[in-house]
View 1 (cartoon, protein in one colour):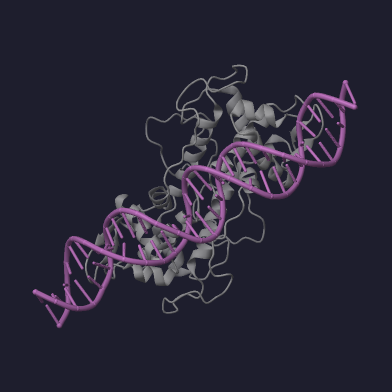
View 2: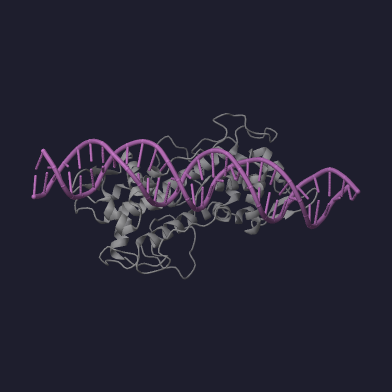
Length: 168
Length: 168
DNA sequence: CTATACTTGACTGAATTAGTTGGTTATTAC
DNA sequence: GTAATAACCAACTAATTCAGTCAAGTATAG
C-alpha cells in the first residue's frame, strides 16, 4: 500500500459522494467544485474506483456517480487500494538467495517484513468506514485536529498527552 | 505521512543496523551489500536519519553508524517521518473560506479529516518498535506472510480468516 | 601520510502526480 | 431528431519525487 495525496483526493471525493448520497447521482463537476479538485483528475480516479466496483455510474443528463455499496461497507482501505497501484516491495522475486550476510537467514528480511507491516496498516484502514467519516462530518463539521483520533478502538496501549480530546 | 519504498528502504536499513548493534559502528557499505541498496542512496537516507537524531555517526576508519537510542525506543513511525518529507494535505492554507457548498460547514473537510486519519496511522506505526522487529527476525529468520500480523495488540475487532497464523 | 569512511552538493533518468486538451459515446429533455 | 448533459477515453504535458550517480570534500585511525 502506498499513501500519497492521490489517495487523499480519492477519499475526499468519496466522502463528498457519501455526504450527498440519496439525492440521486452526483456529478463529478459538483464534486470538483465543492472539493476544488480538477475535473479531469477526478475522472481518472473514478475510472479506477469504478473498475474496483466501489462506485456505479449513470450516464447522460441527470447522471453521475452513486456508491456501489452501503457506506458502512466501504472503508478507507478499499478506496486507497483502488486508486494507488500496488507497490513492488521486494527485489528478490521470490528467490531464496538474496543474502550476503553469511547465510544466517535464507530469505531477505525486507520482503516479509514490510509485507506484514503493510497488512497491519491495511487492516487498520479497513476498520475506518465511510459511514463513520460521514457521521463525524455531519455531527461536527468543524472539528479540531484530535476529534477523529478515537475512531477505532485498539489504541489503548498508549495514553495520549493531556491536551487531546477524545470524541468517540 | 507518506508511505513509499523510500520509507521501506529506511526501515530495512535501520533494522539491519539494529541487528548488528553491539559490534561497534556499522558502515553503510556493509548495509548496502547485505540489503542490496545503493550506497549513495543510503547516504542520503542516513543524512536525514542523523538530522532526525535516530542515528549517530563515527567518522574515519572503523567508523560507521550507531543507533542513537535503544531499540525499544525507536519506532517505525520515527524512521518514516524522518526520511519522508511531510505532505501538504490542505489546499486552503488555514483559511476558513474554502467551500462552495452553500455554507453548510465553514472549513473544508479535507484538511482535518486526513490530518486525523494520519495521526491514527502514525499512532499505530509508533507502536511498532525496532526491538520487536529485531526479535522476530532473530527468532524466526524465515517466516510466512502472516507471522508479523499480531505485532500489536488492538486489532481484536476483526477475526482474521482461517489460514492465518498468529505468532505473538 | 594514507587509507578509511562519513559528509555534502550537484546532477541524472525514470516514474508518478496532477492536470489539460480534445474528443466519443450514452441518455434525457425538448 | 436534435440539442444538451455527463460519463467515458486516450494522448499529452509540467512539475515533482524516486532512486541512483558522480565528484568532491573532511575527519580520524594507524
